[in-house]
Every structure is written in C-alpha cells, then in structure tokens.
Image (cartoon, rainbow, N blue to C red):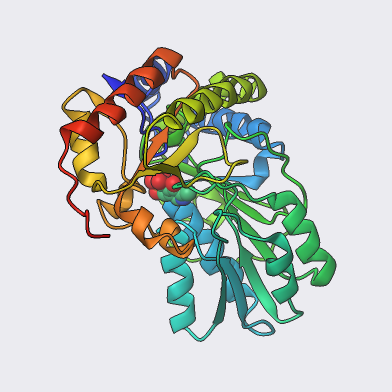
Length: 378
Ligand code: PLP
C-alpha cells in the first residue's frame, strides 16, 4: 500500500499504540479521584500536558486537552467571540478555513456577529495585508489557519497576529494549526491567543486534540460539567489518548526541521515529475507546505482518478476528507471551479519515500490513458 493521504489522517505509530495500551490497562483510575491510584492517572495526564506544552513552546497551564481539532476550534472561536460581544461585533475569517472553523463562525453570524471573509487569491494565498486592513477596534475575533488542509497554503500567523494586535490589542486571534503542527516550522508568539491541534495528524490516535490558550485570555466557556481541564472542557479526561498524543509529539518534536527539509526535497521531486504529465496543473501555491500538493488532471473526474489509483494500492484524496467527495471549497474560493472537478491531493508524512512518490506519479500518468475523459466539453 502507498498511503499518500496524511492530511486526512496518519497511521498510529507502534510506540503510540503501546503507550495507549499500557495506560489503558495500568492507569485506569479517574484522574480526579483523591486516592493514590487516581494520582497516578493525574500524573500521566500532567506529564502529557507538559510534553504538548514543550512542543508548543508555552507553559503547561496554557494547554487544554479536547476531543479533537474540531472541538478545539469550537471552544476557542465561540469562547473568544462571545467574551467580547459587549464591545465587539466583528469577526474576520479567511475564505478557506476548515468546516470546523467556517461553520462555527457561521453559527456566530446567526447570533448577530458581523462576519467578513478574506478570500485566497488565484494562487491560493490569503493576504495578511488584506486581513489587517479590515481590523478595527470593534473586531472581536480574527481566525486564520496556519496551513490549509487542501492546498497546503501557509499564512505567517505570527506576523498576522502581531499586525492585528498593533491595530487592536483586545481583538482575539485564533489559529487552526491542525495541519501545521510538528510539520511546518513555527513560532508561537504571545500575539496568538488560541491555537488548535489534533493528534491523528501526527501519528497519534483519533479522538484527542489540544487547544493552546494564552494565559490571561478572556474566554467564555462553551461546555459545562464537572469542571475538568480547568473548567474549559468538562468531561472525564482521556488520559490514555493524552499519553498517546504526547508520545507522538515527542517522536516528532525534535525533528521538525529535518523532516521539513526531507519532505521539501520530495515535494520538489513530485512537482518535477508531475510537470511531465500533459494537462496537469498544480493548484497549491509555490511556497505551500511541502507535505501537501494539490493538482488537477484536467478533463478527468477526481473520483475516477482516486479509484483508479486505489485499484493499484495508492491512496490519495480529492480534497478534504470531511467533504466526502464534495467539490473542494478551497479551490472554489480560489476561483478554480473547473480545476476543482479534477482535483487530487497528495499529502505526505515524514516516512514517505521517493519510491512511493515515483510509483504514484506513474499511476497518475497511466490514469490518463486508462480512464475515459468524461468532461471533455469543458
Ligand atoms: N482543521 C484542519 C485544518 C483539519 O485538516 C482538520 C481535519 O482534517 C480539522 C481541523 C479537524 O480535526 P479533527 O479531525 O481532529 O476534528
């Protein structure tokens, strides 16, 4: 099998599986229980938090475990906007956010917030200048993802956050970093108020995420219950998955730069190889994350190419996994409606090899002769 869909999810590392199994069997006590056995679970949880804090470059008290990246985005966006409602009605968001951001912002719009959307240009890039130019003293929240999940487009969110704060210090800035975490070299600054990540994109389990919340940030709670995670995310903590997440983070944390260089070289190779294929256009920006490359084999339907490759044991996607075959909203936002019909996303992980990429490209070239050109009229 050649798995080139790491932006959808990654395989769970064996050491992560071992760690989860160990914690599940040996530390099953509730971390809130007051006896010593409960304390053992509490220690595992706090050690896991420390690891994620180390990876973020923040204090452990600024890390909150959540159920997934989606939940992190919901808690941050709803919480930050509602906490500012008394003075700020504006929300600014990019036009290519993940649905867990887009739909959360849409819910806030129904609550009465005024939402402005900044679209990516035809190359797939969102302009920091354009976002900054819309910020006013009444802007409650700006949300911009670090790495786009469909094209890999990157926003320098540290720079953007600094620009926002220089205009309006009380505006909250949230970044969805689910695709960038431990892949794209990144510096967490104090201008970034909240940031979401998810374990399953870095060889951890599905069903656990984390949220960075800058210490001192005013965030209204959106979940109510027993008060776990310092009241922000009630519910008995999933310490086995927190430990698995920490294990996955530890394995990647010190090799982000090295892996980035390796995958950049692989991405260059992939682009050169794909350039040999007629009628193939690259949709990802030139300076996108090397882990993600989006292209269109013009005249062929994404779904047909995907299944052609699948029959040869090669797994890619036609865009965002959660869109389940729907047309790419990122390409549509870029004004690339025709390309969206034929879009394929190859997404890699640190383990991806050149041989795998070469074989995938050969299969893509073969798809051109093996498949019927069904939308010839376009
Ligand atoms: N944000 C981005 C950019 C993503 O790519 C994803 C998942 O694909 C999410 C958020 C949601 O993360 P989760 O699957 O952990 O809810």
